[in-house]
Image 1 (cartoon, rainbow, N blue to C red):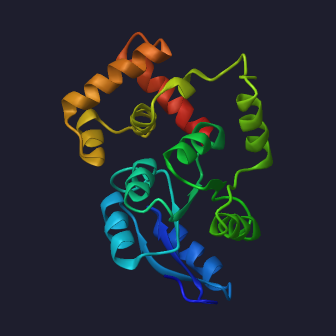
Image 2 (cartoon, rainbow, N blue to C red; image 1 turned 90 degrees about the vertical axis):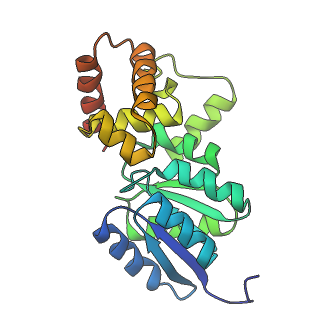
Length: 219
């Protein structure tokens, strides 16, 4: 149990050392917060979470190995009360809702100002949800049944399919994706076929082209 007036302990999960260091500096400048640890892969982060018992975990979508949304699901299964904030450069419209369905308390773009990121951490510390005002309006519209008529077909992909689509766009081979996500190459090939069908891509080359284009547009 957290001691009265004790600093909020935060675990940082991000694949970029410079981003981890930058976030550490932002958090450490706050009198009521402290960084208790950091990690760059899903497995490292999950082990650190179990050992350090942080109050808040900040998590990027892209990790050196594994995936941020899968990490959120794993942590939530172990401790439903822990607060998690996705801090990522990827497109909020594609990932914020998925992250919160997985168990995160909010989503903030890592390119936002120091104040915005710290404010987002404070919001989730209180058990509230944090997304941008634009995303809030989008979620309200969806709740009222007002889905956009120009819905991006990429939004139809499952969490796992979207992650594989992103890695295809990053130029990874089937074998490299399998190693990154701890899956078999057969499973990756099956997902690739499902992604092609959902996006209407006729060939592997077309799928790769669309994945690269989506990757460039998402950051």
